[in-house]
Image (cartoon, rainbow, N blue to C red; front, side, top):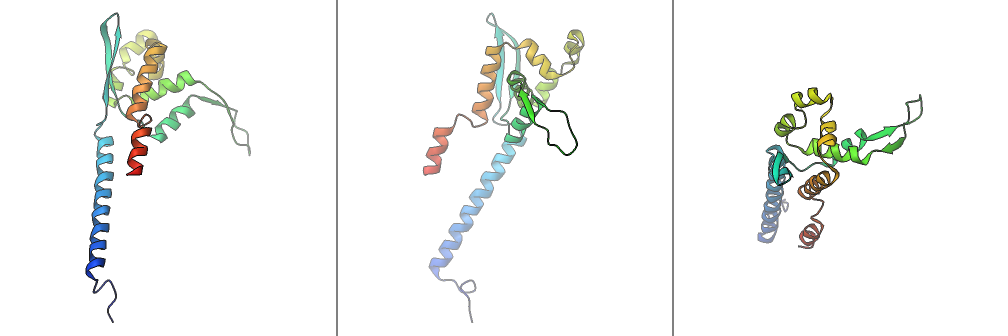
Length: 167
């Protein structure tokens, strides 16, 4: 006795080929997205200008949901640990959260040169790169950098995404 898999009709064969094509397109799409993240494609160069002159420049990359959550946790104060009781969030410093987002979104090579610059940190007696961000960027500059990070991370693509879902 033959099953449909052993002796498929022409219509069944076409459906199977279509499914395989869709699976290959999906796999190719997944691989492309993973490679983009690994190779820092989708990055944007940021220039901080004051009085018309470029003071510093660095590249930022899209940030993942996990990285964003990690930044939020780092900027949040919690209740002290007590046995058999979960810790509760007390307060989140949004300015610090934004600094952590900038810090983690900065491409590693640029982060080492700019935010983790050992000479600058020693001269200013700073111990963490996020503190460098707080020291040198003003609120408007931070806001513009965050806007770019949000955009390249997909937060401003709602209309495009909705259009793609419809198709």
